[in-house]
Amino acid sequence: MSRYAKLTAGLIAAWFVFSLAASALHLYRTGPNAPPLALGIAVLTPIVVFLVWFNRSPAFRKFSMSLNPRALTFVQSWRLAGFVFLVLAAYGILPQVFALPAGWGDIAIGATASLAALQLARPERRSGFILWQVLGMTDLVAAVTLGTLAGFIDPHGIPTSAMTVLPMSLIPTFAVPLFFILHIICIAQARQWAAHRVSPTGRPLHSPAV
Image 1 (cartoon, rainbow, N blue to C red):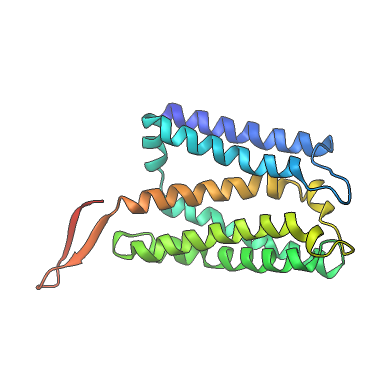
Image 2: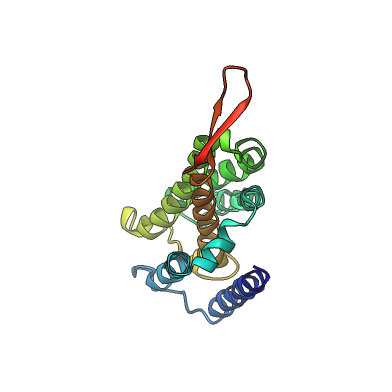
């Protein structure tokens, strides 16, 4: 397990450095009317790589499933930084059709992450924990979708070009796929938690893991 822990930490660090360097070299910048293809590839590639690795490697899957779901959920608290989207929308740097849903969605998930980690990350509240994770994933998908379609929704409005340059480019190229992967791991873990039941005497009972 320690081998995978070091390998995963190294890959995440290399991924961050690559995203930073690619942004500094303006590799994600696109024309005013062009779809952000490079940005889309940067968002999807880490998720696809993780899913393939997770499904093909029993050892890596075992390592992922051994991670603490509460710690993984606490990490989502960083999404409180979504207030930046609201600020940039207020100053006319990002279109409101994208920035407002993305900002408020991130704030909602970030503000409730601690509660989800402390109160929902347990077998007897598995459904609520999974629902919260799904809501977090939905927020990320909605933000990426609106960011991609904003130019088509309002061709003459404010472009989302600020998301393709530093420091904002680190959000779609690093933070979004990382948060999405953490949601996937938490859901996979919760699906294997024992179903919680209560005996007639009030003592908790656990059925075999599902």
